[in-house]
Amino acid sequence: MSTPKISCVIGTYNEEARITRALTHALQWADEVIVVDKSSTDQTPEIALRMGARVVTVPWSPQGHERVTDTMQLPANDWVFFFTAGEIPSRGLIAAMKEAVETTPDLALIMVPVAFFSFGINNPRSVWRNNSQPRAIHRRRASISNTVHANFGCDPVNRIIIPMTQGCYLLHQTHATVADFVRSHCDYMSAEAAGANDLNAKLAEARSMIIANEANFSAHPEIEIHAHAWKLYWHGVALHCLEALAGGPKAPAEYLARAERVLAREWATISPTQNYENTNTTAA
Image (cartoon, rainbow, N blue to C red; front, side):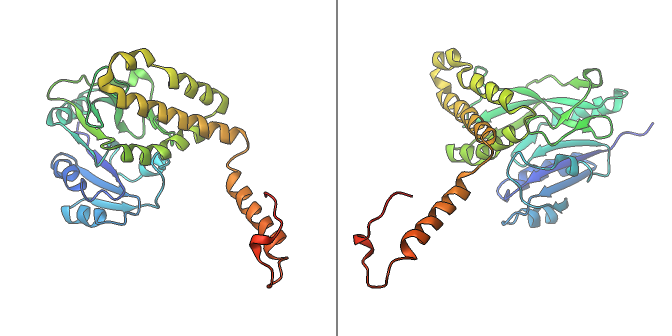
């Protein structure tokens, strides 16, 4: 029986500062390395090509709105390890993943241990803490969707969970600054609401999450920044749900129409000799 080959897929957009580190290890252990680049405007694709990765350019999309089902059609191999340019798997994790792929029949999905750093903090009391995530996927056995935070799944019988140890983990560094958090999570907020089968249920979930962990946050001031970020995210999800339940984002069209009414009512009817400041106007 031949050893299953593994493809590594790295999603990027303007990652020239981090792509070299991501590829330095991936090119050492993966049988195929693909950089799926969302039309970067920096040197990300050029760096990846120079290092020896296969680069596939796709249209830009907000974070969380990617077409994962399309991406998973690109690799040459059925086993795919999926991660971002900001993540680095340890040597122990790669060894454990390869052993699982080689020795476990009918395996569909591997949950890998993730060491999560947010705003530079890794704290077991935080909502952003070490966890297990589905990152190694057999694309013909696992279920794959475009649902943010739930792209991969399978029957629990056909998956394994690799335990975290000091030498076995995926280093995940995100939210380096507040600006980074706001930029990325504005996209994720809309994706969370857009992917909901039941907007009212998602709204109820958001309301629950806003107050969840309040006692824990209050008791541990060292993670206060996580508390505010957590609430900000779920407030954003709630706002998107409420907007969608009201019929979608109507404000841009209404703002444009209001401006057109002002132009038609006031500016189009004022003679060249009139002073606009002396014209009787009312609110739009």
